[in-house]
Image 1 (spheres, protein in one colour):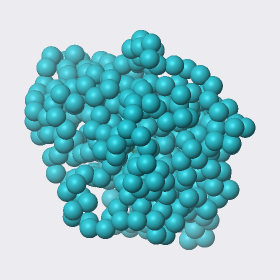
Image 2 (cartoon, protein in one colour):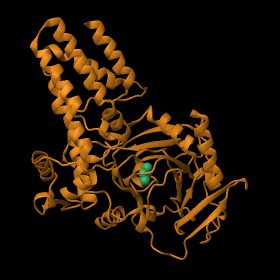
Image 3 (cartoon, rainbow, N blue to C red):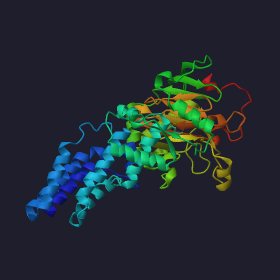
Length: 459
Ligand SMILES: O=C(O)CCC(=O)C(=O)O
């Protein structure tokens, strides 16, 4: 029996195996969540086989029952798991892992089976979903309902699945705990934040939500100062499609600046070492936590792709990105995969004075984040825009494009208008790769003339 179980375990771990670092709650990364849901049918096959072997050997009816249950769950498994990163489907998925499959492991004698499953997931640096995961998935539903002004009907229509009245009761209970105001009744129920608990002003939060609610097709305000053009790179050889979304401060999107192969390569490399970047509180503020995603850092010399992509940032921006131990010109790439309803509330990329004061020396040698260059590695099915509340700019991710902006004014002052955030991801996956370019890259003490003229590259 041990042999059969261990060979099945081997099969299961091969299906689930990958390298990584910390154990991650699957809710923090939609990539991990997809892997978890993809492994569901294998998990049930494993349980079915293991319990059927044990039934044969021990003759215990308990194992026969468990084996039959596993095969019953397998038979009714949702067919299409492609969109499990959709919040309602994921919530129901986590519930299956926790409540239904959890029942397979309640018996003391079957703890070893749970151990085998856990170890398989650990190979992927992922923890078996627990109560906290269920809580996060409910938080994601509430965050999406409040951010996108959706009622239960709207959520169900967008997911194509229905929640039971028990599920809705649980969601309403959690909303109450968060102090959200409930409006409407039945499936028309919506939740509203009575009082903003964010780090930015209520006005900026309202603008952020309003921009997030735009759609890809109505996100632009006609403005004749804006332009679409071809732009030449630093070497003069390469040409980019450039869309200027704001002239002051300068924000531009470049299209087709990374190949599909490069995007896949950097995502795969980053995926292996994802760690939680969300601040997941156990307390009642977790719905409103500032950021929910998983991320990893890749130095330019990590692979040929990272090196090429860093050089491309130089080519496009005319700013140098060489990494140095002391006096670096730029930071390593930060690869981010957003989690369930993953978002990043409005923030600045430069360091705030109290952070600099608290971490004396943090910006020594290389200065602050002069500019941000962000590759969009995936399209996002719904939601997930990058928005600038002060500038009324919303950028809906287009795979293989990139956005670039300066965080400082030409006179070296921090530009508060660059406040920006990432809207919650409603469906699909969002992957980005960000390169923050330090002030040293542009010359620490600005030698630029104080004029409104944009840098040469953008004219
Ligand atoms: O994901 C986005 O659209 C924005 C990300 C961002 O603001 C950041 O990583 O600082």
